[in-house]
Image (cartoon, rainbow, N blue to C red):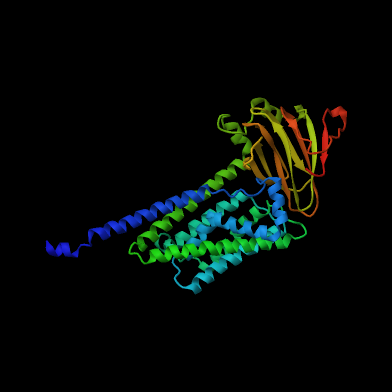
Length: 405
């Protein structure tokens, strides 16, 4: 009996270790929830004054945005965390992190400079899978569960870094980039991303180094990597759900009750859209998006008011965000209903608040793009400082040309 007691660990040490482990799990879960709730919407959701402040702030403003974006980019940080998890030497850490940096810098700079845009939901879905991949490799899942040799880690990190770069480029292209200093804006943003990554990396290394000394580290490492696998899978499903909503927006609008959504079709609207020959539009507006530029067009809707819309470009696809902003709001809040990169879109909306509703378009091409927007419903046109110009009274429509909105 005495020998049994002598071989046991002191109770206070057991309680202390268990308390530390529980505290870490609670901290990790809290950090995960925080990252999931962290908003990255610093694109068109900014006011025009904030956009102008970015332009006036020059390259330092883009550098600051890059750093803050990386520090709030939980998917990128989770991937970096997975890369360094079992690395113990500075040489290995520098080698693999540099490979990731080179990968995402290539696509960030190239895609943004050339105006290459991919569906951001699909890109973020693949980034979510990359988090699962790196954690699966950390637990030697390829050998243990698939009975195959894992792919070369260096090549995979560079390849996945290229995909992460497209995600960063998608966010950057929504900012008011300067045509005259486009390359410097991109490089400044990328430098900020790397500074943010270095800051986050230092904190991660301190955290891992502290826990590496604990006899709970093996258990901690397994739990953490399994959590990363599940988290990456959750991010993938969440982004694919968002992609479904944007690619089949009308179907979801019809299926969602008015009490829970701000965008929905009514039976009359659906009938009107199904038979365009029967439709008589109230207003036809022409909006010109300059080369390498962006514009917004808004109408005013009362709470509960509905309208139907249809717009198309003269050929080129544009990134757009269909959204609404409550009247009198000073916090910068906006609600996005649909985002994509297309040459045309149509639908209807029933407003859930009084405010302006409309579109933000971004043209990354080298030539101006003309948009023809048609509207019908219970709304008020916003003149944007210009007088309307009526055309062809026989069609009973009005056309407005906006050189600047």
